[in-house]
Image (cartoon, rainbow over the protein chains, first blue to last red):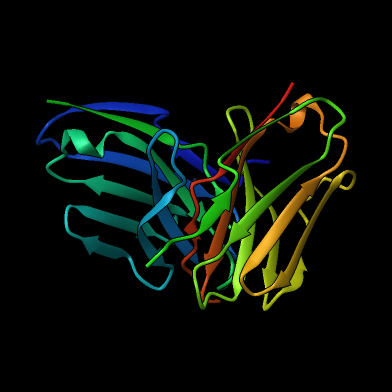
Length: 112
Length: 112
């Protein structure tokens, strides 16, 4: 049972475009949704996160849009840069200091 | 400030040998999580300690895997009688007993 689903599996955008990564979940108890960025050979790095009481979170070029009713969220990467090329994971947890459930990841390639 | 430290970064074992992986959490963080990452299964939760006490080991294989946190500065994951299917990147994350989890670079375990 895959509780956190991500799409697309891979995404290629041109430099300067907005990349949109999608995530959905099944467990209504999930209340915390972080996005992690991972480069080859490195561990996942916390990029941005949102709590279920909010519907939008911005941090620079990165924005999370959250729809609790539909159990969906998305990560928008504005003005994409080649350095943003990485795999992005959506994750979820129920309550603080709880195990994270990860999606399968979206590989983003930004072409110069 | 140093992030989560994991040693060794790479470990190669023969089938049937034991492997011990080390994790040093961020100073002051009282929660430690272990995850495993493979191409096929993705990122999976294994086990979690809070203030050195085991809280949740629901993701740990019942045989051959064990984890300990003897003091607040390190945790170990031990795999006895390693099998080829144990080959993975083992990731440790620490948290201030809050929502955010910060990952180390991982230990790549290869079982021949």
